[in-house]
Image 1 (tube, one colour):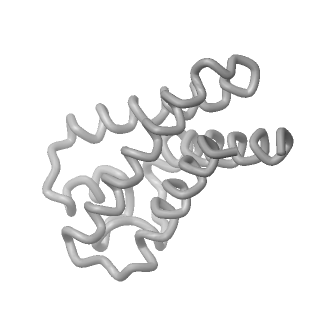
Image 2 (tube, rainbow, N blue to C red):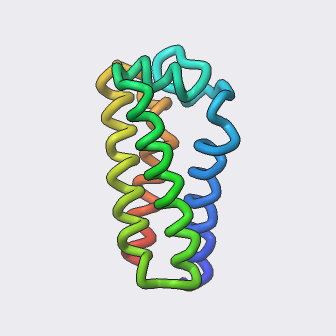
Length: 120
């Protein structure tokens, strides 16, 4: 089980960092509305750009904490529950603007995986 938990933490943490640090300006099929990047996605949700920076910073810090929890288990719950909350918010935003359910799949998956980390 220990290896499964480490694998989940690596998948979650590195994926979130990939989205927020490497793919900010890249189009994906998962973006909300018809957005081609994160700026347009937050605009589609009706959220101000400053909020994108807040969420991006928060998600990146939580992802780093989750990765750090491999070596420092005391931060695991903060990171995993924090990521879960932000992913629940992402799913809610997709629902808010009427996106097809498949666009919510990555956020929902990371929500479930983050909660799984807390139960392993």
